[in-house]
Length: 388
Image 1 (cartoon, rainbow, N blue to C red):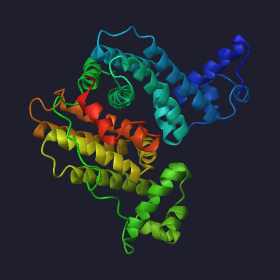
Image 2: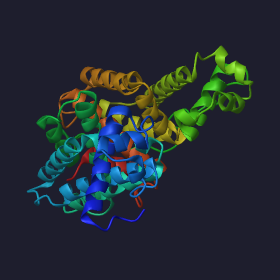
Image 3: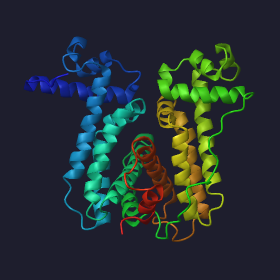
Image 4: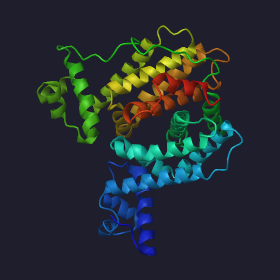
């Protein structure tokens, strides 16, 4: 749609965008309709289509406004005294902007799951402006690596403190993110490895494993079509069975989604354990866990969409997946890490940051074109050693 030409039209369009954020945050993008948005904005439904062709178009406008606000806030920061000060200023600007536009942030999280172009359009420019801030201290491709890692940390911190706990990001979160970005994950030498033979690859269920075949089919159909678009009959057909067979293993489509999520979680945990089985230190364990996650994303390319849609279908699944991993990860770090192993001592913030870094670096490297000119080892070496 073309932009409105009059001041009144511009204000009406902005009112619709603001109202859509409140509606999406309250009801969710999938459950909200144009009538809900117009009702919240105090406009007739017909007026909506003067400014937007569809609900999807206003979602895109909402996320782009948030993206542009983040880019503007970060790009206008005064120059930091050093890399850590620069990263901490970026962190504070990210949290302040996301907190001020929290409705848009929540809507973006749901919408990006089903629209990869929207996700790339959102994260790419934000990572680029962060890389520009860090380029004075980390030239070339390293600035991009640090930017995406920092963005992953900030994103996971914002989700935990602002969305799940419904509060604000504490000062220690910005400090921890900056320390990990500038100082690296560890001060110890990065553990190099050979790229071959590091762990098991994804195995297809055996021909007689009907439930396994059904879960594999459900993962693909949920990922390709989304939860709302997925059909029981299509899942069963993909698995090679009649539709009625579905109900021998699942009570409902929602039950199937929950089991797919739990299967993916267990696959990731087992893969990380297998990859790091021969690790000689906790730092080496974490390095291998990153590689396990990258391979997991390659094997489960729909995993990101499934997890995000599952979270908005049933909030308890977010805790069953991310919360479970975070709690166990934090406990393992607290038990196994030795003094000086990692740059920060807060095991929960460290675990959350490592999850966020792995998530964002994995999405960028595996699904969105990678980091040109950097091998996997070089990428992780930059993140583990920090900006030196």
